[in-house]
Image (cartoon, rainbow, N blue to C red; front, side, top):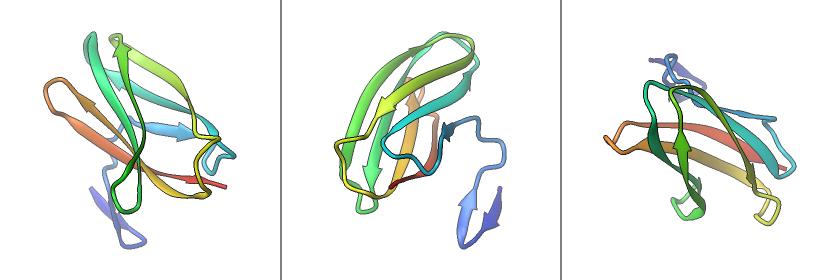
Length: 95
């Protein structure tokens, strides 16, 4: 891990979102070491969930489009959690 602009960033994170910033639709991508379910959650800066979805991931590279066109323009956190409670998160800007 390293610090960037006051935030701790996991350099080994496989979770990405693009485009970032987005106008509402974004694609998340991540690598999975096995076939498992992921909970994808987008929260606002005070922790309110604005989007949740269970994703059935396969071993290897996975992508999923998420539609955030109906939420306010702001900073959000995208988090992914596996069934074994492994979690990752990144920031996303909706503009």
